[in-house]
Image (cartoon, rainbow, N blue to C red; front, side):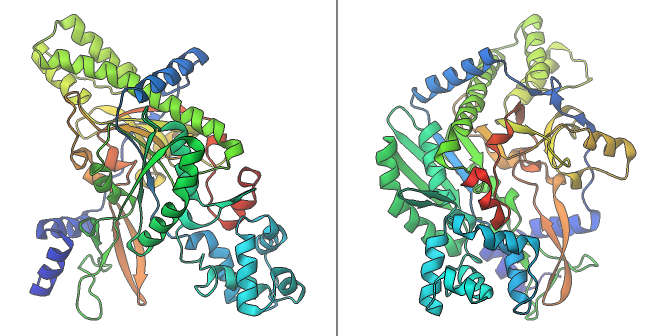
Length: 504
């Protein structure tokens, strides 16, 4: 099955033959549905801090920042913005004069409000010798869209979201990458003024990100009294996954070579593992707002981080006691209540003293994450649940609908009973009580991958996605869910989202 050319390709990517066999076996076996104990809700898996608890958490974070800890803001930014412009690409493929859809009409009616309007106007003049207004009056709307999307114009159709102009200010416009620098300066600046921000990017966009940061960081640093340390990484070739034919045999390209595809955002657990930090904030690149609306985002990021460092301090105290010898049963019972009440990790097992000490040490000595959760305002999506683990315990997990057997009425009811969804708003603690970094791949549940159906060159194929970064890749972490307000969640999924009040 594996020839010398395959072996050379595997070696170049850093993928072992064993990993290849495991991936091909996954196509045949598929992935099991996760077993639910129920949706996490306020008071049953989701924390809603009182005003006093919230203030204590904010104070705890400010104190932590003053103690010279390593804090990093981690921003997945490799995705291209092509899906954001899906409707505009479809419009270009229609015949000139084709009746515009409501989406297209909304796009053109609001175009003057776009932060990229001035750049687009300049591109239209350069390409067509006429500005946007003149082209509109002449009915040349396709030319305007072409100037926005095509490489000879602004090239927005192939750029990542992080490099597009989202928000307009008196002194110019900002991209999401710049907004994340500003955010970092607002809640992740240490006592010495250092702000560490890490972007994961695609290889073809690395130079553009570096250029943007080089041009913009000095002005932002001056405004916020910060010193930026911005770093970048790319998804590792070793996290690519092999494609398969519908019969689960390896998909081979016309030249006979194996086809590998990116393994999805779960591959970034390797990038996160390389980060040298005590605490890491994680948020998607497109979930940013202008300065006038940042206060809620900043407050709740600080609040989540404060809860995390408070809980971590208690965990470390318990681990040091367990590491120093066998504690009294009463003390271990207190630890067990903390594990169940604060970390929502439950078991039906009963333990002798030594067994309990071992169980507590294993469960407490894990990476810790505090995740913001937003109340559902529409159809339930991926969100917070209580789920069974391979060892029989129940813990908090962020799940997608694809991981749940929706054909089972009971499981479907549990999923639809969810009150909150996942906005990807995480604060993570990556060191153990001795100060050593956890090896994050050790805490991935490999049985939480996903198989999708794609095509290449007109041929059907099956694609394998690794366990998602905040789903199965963090399955064996300690987790706390905290309710955060909807105003902290403002993603840009389509270009018309930029016209929403939150992005003006």
